[in-house]
Image (cartoon, rainbow, N blue to C red; front, side, top):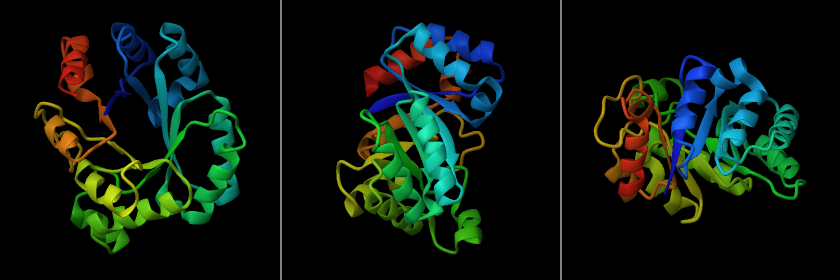
Length: 227
């Protein structure tokens, strides 16, 4: 299991200050939509300048027509990121085209498909997809697996079931982790570190419990020790 730290702070300078505090640690860094729109490619270069061994997850959740998604995927690979994601609801054709494009590169990044956002509870999810989260997450994961992606983004609670219906090696990245029982905030399907371990999550995403702490490095070290 790998720790992925969410860079979701209000300003670039705050994100950079956090990264500086964590520069000695073996962690992934998640650059999301807000940070990337605001700070762009320059942020990715600054991350690598602080520590070239940091792994970057570009979390943009691409969803568009297949050719546009493939073009966007090519651009993301060219940025040198180590992992990015698309929406599984874009469909198998789009995901296959993304992978065809990505696989033209000699050292392609990990590509994940978003199943059900962890901000959904079952009622709000069913209002859109007319299927319970647990079932639809597996359906989306099977689409991603058949399309050649490396794994999915899901809540912890779908992780084991997804692996059972795809392959044990099919990656699950699970946001909404409150490692030691912290507040759930705007997430619905949250879980602690022990649950993530039991559900065989490959990557856990932790944001607020780290960057709202008075000692973010200490929190990261404690998470890594417990992983």
